[in-house]
Structures are given as C-alpha cells and as structure tokens.
Image 1 (cartoon, rainbow, N blue to C red):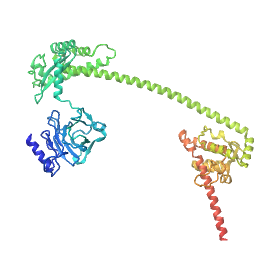
Image 2 (image 1 turned 90 degrees about the vertical axis):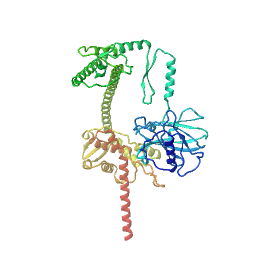
Image 3 (image 1 turned 45 degrees about the vertical axis):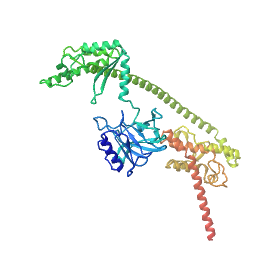
Image 4 (image 1 turned 30 degrees about the horizontal axis):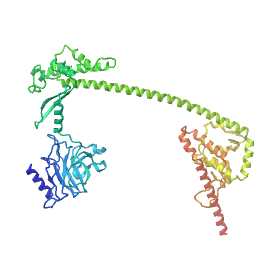
Length: 556
C-alpha cells in the first residue's frame, strides 16, 4: 500500500498522464495533490484526500487546475464494469476555497443526478449529512474522457480546521448493520430469528433473518422442514441423491447437478410436470374471484392433485417464490378489472354527452332557419317604407353620435346567418334581383357575380353593385379616421344594413362550398377588409386620373 501511494504521489507531482482504463489498486490514503512542478512542503489549500475507511471509495485524484480535480472511483468487488459508489474525505483546506470535483469514470448512462439528486457532505463541526444544492451538480457526457459520463459538483470550503467528507448518498456501513443485528438478537424476541447462512469471500457473516409470530414460525418449520411439501419434480436431482434432507442450514448439503444416463427422459418428465403446475395455477387463478380459499390452499390442492407423479422435496425459498408470484398475479388481475370498469363508466358518460350535443345542434339549426325566413317575410312586407327612409338617411349627413353608432355596428363581424337555399331566398322580378332589406340589383350583373372566383373579388364587385363607385370613394367602412395620417378627417360610414346584406350574400356563397362553422366564420371576418381595399383602389384610380389630367393641362 505504501509503495503504491508513493508511486501515485510521484506521478501526480510530475503531472504524468495516466490512462483512465488502468486498474486502480486501492483507495487513496492521506494523499496530497500538488500542482505540477511544485517542490516543497504542502501549503494550506493543497488538498489531502483520504478514502481508507469503511465504505470509502476513491482510487485516484488528478490535478487539473488550482480549482478543479478529476476523481477516479474503484469498481465493485469482482465486477470491474460497475463504478457508482464514492465516499472520501478532504482536509488541509483554505477558508473560502472554491473547488470543482469531477467524478470521471461513472459506469451508469442514466442517473438520478439528472433529476435533482445531489451528493452528500458533512464536516467535523457539522457531523449531520446534508445535500449539496442541486444547482451546483452536473451530470453529462464529457468529450475529454472518451465520452464517458461525468458527475461534476462545485463546493466552497468555509472552515480551515474542518475535515469534509463527500459521499454518493447516505452511507450505511457493514459494522453499523452488525451492531444493529446484535442489539436485536440480545433482546431475545420471539418473532425475530437470526441464523448464519454462510461467509462471504472476505470471511464476513451472511445473516438469514426470519421475522414472524412464534405460532407462524413453528407452523412454517413443521410444514416446510419436517413434513416436506409435496409438489412435482422441478429438476432437483441433487436433492434425490442427497436423500430426504430436512435441514437446509447444514453445510454438507451441497447444491450441484449430477449427470445421469437417463437425463433426457428425466428432463422430459420435469418439463411436463412444470407445464401441469402452470396449467393448474392458471385454472385456479381464473376461478379466484368466485373462490374463498386462500392462495396457500389453492397451491396445495394443485400440488396434491397430481398423485400419479413422483414426489420431491422442494426448498422453502422456491415454494415461497411461487406463492408470491401467484399472489402478485391475483393482485394485478384485480387492478385490471377495476381499471376496465372505470373506463367503461367514462365511455358511457361520454356517449350520453355526445347524444345530447347532437340533439342541441340539430334544434339550433332548425331555429336559425325559421328565424331567417321570418326576417325575409317581414322585410318584403315593409320594403317600400324602409327604402324611403334609407334614401332620406343617405341624403342627410349623420350626426357624430349616429356616426359612432354606425361605426360600432359596422365593426361587428360575429353575425352568422343560417344557410338558406339561394332559389328560395332571392326573388326575381322585372329583371331585378331582391337581395333583402329593399335592395335590388340588375339580374344580368347578379348572374355574372355568381361565377366570380374568390371571396375578395365577389365582395368587391357586390359592394360596387350596391353602393356604386361614387358613394364608395367618399365613405369608409367604420367611419373612423385612419391613424396613419395625423390630419386625417373621418369619412361617413357605410350603411350597416347594406353591410349585413353583403355578409349574408357571402355567407350563402360559402355555405354552398363548406359546412365547417370555423372556416365560415374565418372567411366572413374578412368582409370589412375586402371593402376597405376596394375603397382604396377607387381612391387610387381617382388620384391617377387627376394626375393624368393635370399632366395634359401642363403640356398644353
């Protein structure tokens, strides 16, 4: 150990690079990390690492910069592929010294460090374990270390005399476990039993703990250890050779497979026995909802029902595993049935809601059709009077309050009339077409309008047919002055009832193409925009005409 540490110390001092794939022999012990090229006694701030204590793990430390260190952890015993646990101490720190520790040879690609977990830290003055703030912990794939996963965390030492200890999570040592078991054993509790199962490779105890009531403990020993539970053979050839073994704690009862001449016949019989046990368990599992017997009784019935097969002694551990798996299957079956019942109730409720919604939609459509027809009848009867009032209203300049009201009505674009067949709505009389509200247009122009492509051209041509270019060039859709010009004067708004006629005609056109309410609303919302564009086009053409006339006058 001393020779290895001396070699590692010389390597760190000279700055020689060591490959991360080399085998790390042991933990560091009071290992001082010095900057490359430094000679002399360690100063305050030259960190000393130590992992030679129980549950400690740190195999190598590399000095990167004054504030950064690369740490290499040792793999698990007899398994060099797994490297996760670390636990080490740091001393000889300087007050307010900031460092970054990089654990560079983690073997896990996914870690809880990505989800907010953080290493543990404690010191001599604060012996209680605390977590480092998760904002100072980073887990990432590092290109400088052959794209291995690296866990980096930043820390600031605040007391020079303290020794700090860092760990992967809360350490629980083997010595602490043995002390705890010794205390329980000294209490002589009836429901607790501790037995020596064997020794580890390093000659440490492997304990078998049994926790149950005294009655259950006696019954379990009698049923398993003495009565020898009878179930079909499960390829336990070593048990038959060893005889009827009743004490599985004896060291002489070794578990090993022996070769026989009739091995093929025996394996076929074992396979059939296993299939029979599985079939019987599945059958009992299907009848478990209507049965009141316990899982132990069902399993015993399944095993005792096959009297035509040879009996075998099965270890208690295997028997308990089979019982556990059977109980887990029953629990999963109950959960699945509850989930199915909950899903069925949700589907029934959704079907009821859909049915009610369909009835409401159909009723609303009928009411809209009736309302539209009633409006048309009333407008036809009151047509002449309304037309006279509209002519008077257009000849008189509206007052400011009236303009404001017209502006608010013109801005509304949420009117959705119900679709009515065109032949039933529009009336032809003396070469004129009645659009509603006493508005008549030429029949030939109306038919030419119907073959117009696009909502924009349709709306603009319809506006010219209703108002005419002379009226449109001196009006605006909303009656509000534009914000682009500071000295702009507001123009009178267009008649709201004529705007509604334009929307109704466009709605009838769109309703023949689609029934999607969302698409219809989106296309109707652009009516004001189309009319504004038409007014701007008319004004531009008028200005261009004036320029041409002024140019001719200048030439003359």
